[in-house]
Amino acid sequence: MRLSTKGHYGLKAMFDLAQNHGSGPISLRIVAQRQNLSDNYLEQLIAMLRKAGLVKSMRGAKGGYFLARDPAEIRVGDVIRALEGPIAPVHCVSEKNPGNCNEADNCITRTVWVRVRDSIAHVLDSITLADLCRQAEEANKD
Amino acid sequence: MRLSTKGHYGLKAMFDLAQNHGSGPISLRIVAQRQNLSDNYLEQLIAMLRKAGLVKSMRGAKGGYFLARDPAEIRVGDVIRALEGPIAPVHCVSEKNPGNCNEADNCITRTVWVRVRDSIAHVLDSITLADLCRQAEEANKD
DNA sequence: CAATACCCTAGTGTTATGCTATGATATGCC
DNA sequence: GGCATATCATAGCATAACACTAGGGTATTG
Image 1 (cartoon, helix red, strand yellow):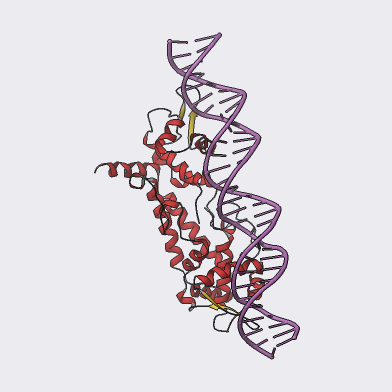
Image 2: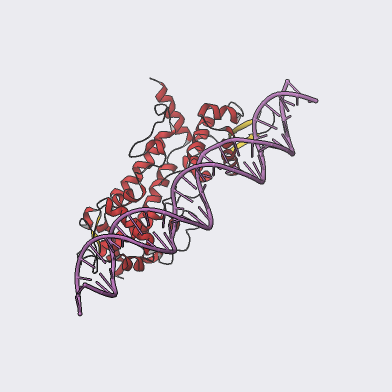
C-alpha cells in the first residue's frame, strides 16, 4: 500500500515550482538541490509531468521549468496520476481500464477497493498546489 | 499506489472463512478453489494471518482454518495490515516506525500523505468481515 | 562560440512480487 | 498401526518495478 518515490519526489518538485511561480523558468538543478533530490532522476520525473501538460519548459541558458497553470488550478491528484498512473488499489478497480475481472458482479471484496480508491482520489483531488503554498506560509509565521 | 495480491487474495480468503464461520475448520484447498487462487501461495498468506492471530488452525485430517474471532470483530484493516504491513503511502508517514525524515517539520507535502494514510485507514477500519457477509447476502437476494 | 540547461535513451544493481516445489509434522479413521 | 489428509516451513526462481546513474544530443543566451 505504498506510493513510489516518483509521486513523492514529483510532488515535492511541483510544490517547489508552485512556491516560485511567476518568476520565470527555474532550472531543475536548483529544484533538486532545494528538495534534496538527484537531479538526473528528477529530470525523468519532470519529463512525465511535462508530457501530462502540468509543466512547461524553456530550453537553453536561463531556461528551466515552470507550471503550465496557476497553482490553484493544479490538484495534487493531477500530479500523482501523471507520475503513478491511474489510482487503483487493485487492478480490477482502476480509474482507467479496470481490467477484466470475470467475477466482478459477485465479488464482494471489490466494493472495499472501490471505497478505498474513491477516498484516496477525494483527498488528492481536494488539495491544490496553492493550498500547499498557503500552508507553508502559515507554518513560516512562527 | 497499489496493493499487492497479498492483501487482495488474503481478504478474499478471509471473506470465504467468514461466510463459513461456525461450521468447523475449512481446508485451504477448498478456499483456494472457491476463490480461484493458487493453494500453495494461499498457504503462505494464511500463515501470516495466523501469526497475526486472525485465524486459527487444526492440523491433520479434517483439519483446516477458521476465524479466531467473530466476523464482526475482524476489520478489513486488520487483515490488510497483517499482510501488507502498516499503512504508509510514503515511508515517512508510516503507521509504525515512521522513519527519520530530517525535514519532517517543514515538509509541507508530508501533510498530504498523512491525510491519504488516514483516509485509507478509516475506510479499511470501518468495514468488518461481517459487513461483507451481509452485503453478499443482500446481493444474492435478487 | 561557449556555457547553460533541457531532452532522450540505455544500462544497472537491488528489491519485491507471485508464485512453484518439496519435505516434515500432526491428526482422524479404518 | 498405517494410510490419507491436512497444516507447517523453507527454499528457489523467473519476472518486473524501482531508483537511480551515465552520457550524449539539442536549443538558447550572452
